[in-house]
Structures are given as structure tokens and as C-alpha cells.
Image (tube, rainbow, N blue to C red; front, side):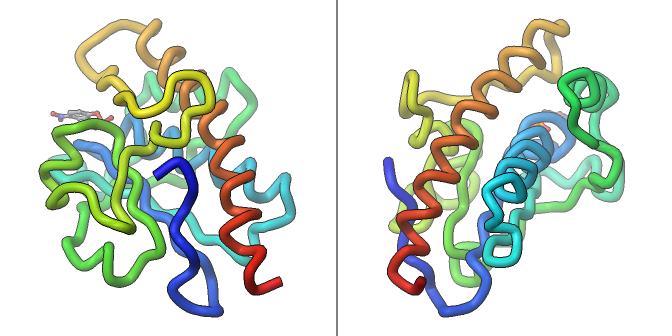
Length: 166
Ligand code: 4NP
């Protein structure tokens, strides 16, 4: 999935980002992608949400280290509250992008609307966004760098996916 699937409807294009806990990786991607989409002027046409396949952290804010990494890079992580993944997502969203292979297995595998977030990584496509939860600060910086470059590519892919109904 180097491009994004075509819109399901003429309404808002819905992107769901998924990891395990929804407190580190997918919230980081959520905040960065939403910021890039706003910069591109596409925020009235695209909605980003995120969730975790596990439910342990539902209702909680972002992991402090993930939040600090985002704040240090000029983003606002404060609005995030963790949600659990709903198996209906591929039927209600235009695309579901997951962080690693375990997430992919947990959501039922690849499909026309389900793939890895880093399928769109312009530098090293097709890999995982590694789980930084049990590691040090470097892991969070690495996640942010992957997420920033991939979010730029996703915005470019969004322009293409949305072009059909301009
Ligand atoms: P995330 O990281 O999937 O990037 O949000 C994790 C957060 C929490 C846990 C695992 C991964 N946990 O086991 O609680």
C-alpha cells in the first residue's frame, strides 16, 4: 500500500492509526499527521483518529516520554486520550494504518484498507514502527523521526487519493 485507498464516500476521509497501547506510537503519529494535514489545508476533508489493540490504558493521556518528545519538537500532545481498537474500523474508515506486524495480525491482517503505517515511509518502506515503551528516550526520538517523514508522504498520498473528487 504505497498509495492510499480511494475514498469510500464523498464525505470526510477517515484515517485510523493503531498500535498496542495507544499511548506511545499511534498517538505520536496522530498528533504529527494531524498537524501536517492542517498545514496542508486538508483538515476540513480528512479526520485522523487512533487506538490501541489492547485496552489497558483506555481514557489515559499519552505516555509522559512520548508527550515530552512531541512537546520538545513543537507539537501539542495534551488532547490525547487512549481508545481501544474496534474491529469495525475497516468498514467505517477509509484506511487503517498499524505500527507493527503484531498489530497487523491483531486487526486481522492486510486488506485493501489495512496496512502498515510505514508502507508509506519514503526512506525505508514496509518496516515496523518499533515499540519504544520498554526502552529509553532514543526510542521515542526514532519513532518521531519515522513518523514525521512518513506523515509528509501520507499527506502527498492524500492529495492523490482526494484528487478524484476535487
Ligand atoms: P504503544 O506502546 O503501543 O506504542 O502505545 C505501548 C504502550 C503500553 C504497552 C505496550 C506498548 N503496555 O503493555 O502497557
